[in-house]
Image 1 (cartoon, rainbow, N blue to C red):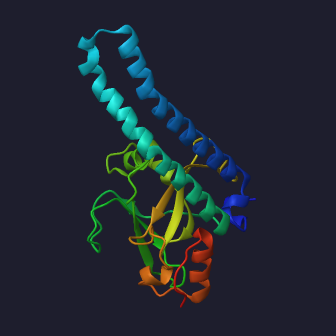
Image 2 (image 1 turned 180 degrees about the vertical axis):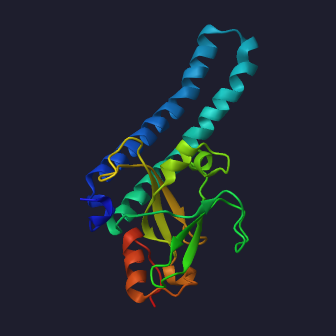
Image 3 (image 1 turned 120 degrees about the vertical axis):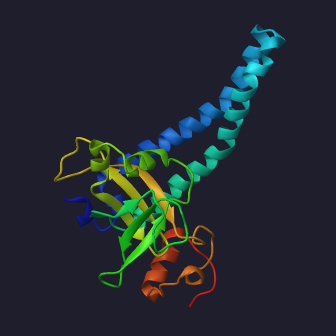
Length: 225
């Protein structure tokens, strides 16, 4: 079956494997970043003279910083899983750019997804979350090599662009009839990253059933319609 033929993205076996691999790497990265400052301090105290303190300060601080933010990255991986369990994949030739969109005030990189209810209309989503964006930035750049841009054709999307969604790229070398996703990334609309009722961040006036699905997907709590 083609990825978009599954009732939800999570039922697509390669998607589950891609998520498991990405989350495992995130957890191992946290362990590595957490241990690296202590290892450096141990080496500094046990084997090197105090003259090397200045050399070790920056890597120790950076390792501590990455260890602090890595749990947030892991939490995003689990939010991605909840969305994959609620929405199916769409694989489309999605417009995107690193340049500011002429109809938006934000200057962040953007994607344009079809409106779920209005044919011919599109909804902008931005790369607001500053993690794992290097992969996307390099391929969205105007001067990116054709082989890199080709990896974003199509762009995978699971979610509701009025609130949130998961994007992915196609793994190079995978079968066109049975493509495999990689680089799962979370997109959220402004305000929708907070645990508010979706109706409070709903300028498109989504239908009640779509709001209910969004609330159920991420466990939103708050006033109902």
